[in-house]
Image (cartoon, rainbow, N blue to C red; front, top):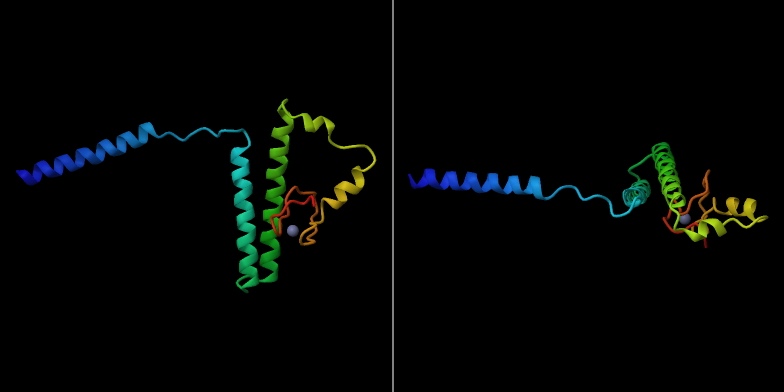
Length: 138
Ligand SMILES: [Zn+2]
């Protein structure tokens, strides 16, 4: 009898706990429109670092490393472009209008494709280096 009561109480507590959890802890909405993208960006950088580590420790072949790295960098460029797009769509960004002085545009975009820290070259200009993760602007 006592045992059955204990089981019932335990079941009740378990049900109550799960019920509360499900109902009272909904997924919080992102605090900023780019938050989920920045999270993804950080994740890609982490993956790139892991990839580099595995490559250096000899777990990956050259071909596998290049394929995975290119894929991650492509995804990174996509995420960065999305972040830029969202930020430029927001009106409270005075720098966006002042950016891009005439004349230096071509040289700037070329320079932005080579990392000033590790010298890695990229097909598209990035804000952060896909190799070492440092800012592409020195
Ligand atoms: Zn770099």
